[in-house]
Amino acid sequence: MSDRIRAIIVDDESYNREELKYLLSYDHDIEVIDEASSGKEAILKIIDQEPSVVFLDVDMPGMNGMEVAKTITGLKKPPLIVFATAYPEFAVEAFRYQAVDYLLKPYDEKQLLQAIERMKDKRSPQENNQKQRVGKLAVDDDEKTIYINPDHIKYIYYLDKHAQIVTTSGHYHSKLSLKAIEARLKPYPFYRIHKGYLVNITFVQSISPWFNGAYHLKVSGESDQLPVSRNYIKGLRDQLEL
Image 1: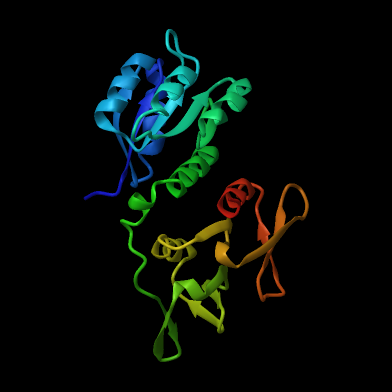
Image 2: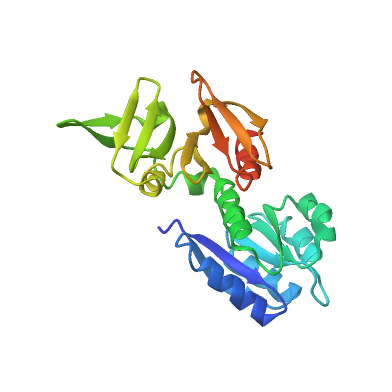
């Protein structure tokens, strides 16, 4: 069975639907299974097809997005909701329906990427468990290969064309790119906090303001403080806080 995220896009403007569909096509974990141009049409398609997520426009004629959200949250298998609108004043009301995120038009690709990551994190345990947590990360050490349990990795950073892997028992190097390692560790609780850093959120001890919207992160048992880019701080907090 495919573990792709099945999405329906709801917007009364065809251009907006096409734009969002195009942007989502870059993520191979997402499959746009249908579109709807009105609230009533959306409800019928959501009930029939049971998508994982609905990208829902707020301001639509007739039944608006908030009314659609109120209806579908009462379903036996309600989808996740990502609201999309040109009007920021609807944000407070949107989160009453436990929305995953609130996207403003025109779409910002970075904001959309963050929304997708939060959406993936909030998928049901049954969906997430389809990606089994098995195997170890292989790294070369001199003339031998060492296999590291991902649960023992505290954080990983990129330096001198190598990924530097800090674990509970030592420091290792890998010729793999940070992006490649991130993909292999996807079933585990790792989160990118900076373009050059991945952290195992199990070991996060504290975060503190730094400057210009950025933060410092303290990892248990380590003296170094890791940089957290301002673009990642909200997603990190969502990961850490119950």
